Length: 617
Image (cartoon, rainbow, N blue to C red):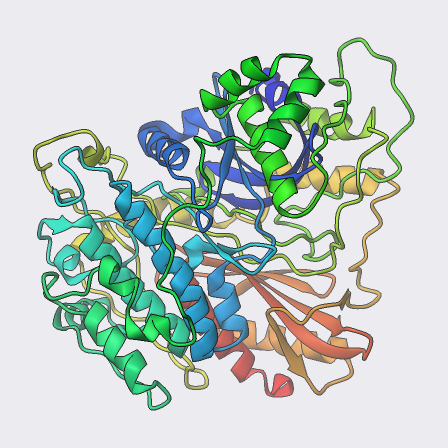
């Protein structure tokens, strides 16, 4: 590993803990030196990406071209010989998926509010000639103002022949895939996106998926027939809208244009959905330009010229972050950045508040922040990049050797971290030809994974399903051997071991969640409550149920890091369960968090585990 790769990003940002991992990428919380704003930095290893590197380029190009109030903002791209750093908007609310789970299902009013934002984002994306092709609640984040932000454009397509050009690559997630994709037909990207939006709307209103079955072929048959259950609590107008979106024939499917002023979306609103971007990149904010001009001691004209090039470099990031501060009513001001560490300067006193690293092997909540962007899920997570010892210590030293006097305190970290966002990446052999060719590409069959059945689920329900061989399971079959090889040591990696050593050697990093007692949560997010008063009894009951369900786990304090394979050779679920105290009452609860694997399968399994814990009812 080249230390210069991190030296480059450290010129502009203060890096904190890793809050999302998966495959060949990790996401770190960071703070921009000049503005003091928090950001998400997605770090990818170019060598490990291999043939998937073109998809990262597609994602970056798309996010450079898309600027919308309901799309996660790209601020800065730093590329070195070995790494790609994507600096993105910080979204503290986590995934929409987890928000749905925490409330079982959303009210019609809240669903309408969220869905108007989704329609706004997708109408804008389509207007720019893109099809997203991986729309699902895991790819929508909630920002600090409770607004949605669309993410993960790694599977998007922008056909040179226009959005009406037929695509051929099957990609995305099976539960949200349109019938024409399941059947292997050429399809229109915007029509397939509308189907996915219909499935998403159903999930918001019902809390489970419209097309599910214990057998994956049963799922595909239901999608192709377009048959789903309409729960009794759905209003007639909601059921009508769903039927218009979940039309098997794409030509009979409602369009995004008609959704903008659909009666259901207009209920309680005087105006149609506004899909145009509120961010006018052609008109620059005078206050932000003036501050940059004064700070860099350059003329206004020079600064305007530099910003207008939109290279997504330091000047772009600083302008966009200043603009974000102003929009939130904060002062438009820049500050002198701290000197880059390790360049001959004397060592100052240690930072009294060094960052508190969070690793996958540690107990959740010792130093928690909600997820801001998420992780990328690739076929073989065992090949995830590991920071070398020298790199890890350089990052630690950069934060502790020379603290900046103006460094603000990070926000309260006792709030549980939201589940990282994951996505299924298409086959490495597929280079997303729709983005580059004008003729239809040869169809490449790409597995979509296994959707999980509808919830809530019967107690102790058998989860394993006999899955016939389908074109969509090529990926999972290929990954089976690598899963077996890494099974024995999935919970131990060099980076996690180093972080644990550093945590023990750093006096200020005192662990809050030891075996002396469960940690206390200020918010009841993703928590199931219990009437019991003895945390050891609750923990013992959970472990007994995990053993019955053949779920492997590692115990640390009152936290359990769990792994479960629904079928030998298939990709596994990795999640955390923790016994905790709630607020000031001292009542006990069980907090949960998904780390890897299919989101709906995770929901089904965890609900089955908790319902089987007699002590947790």
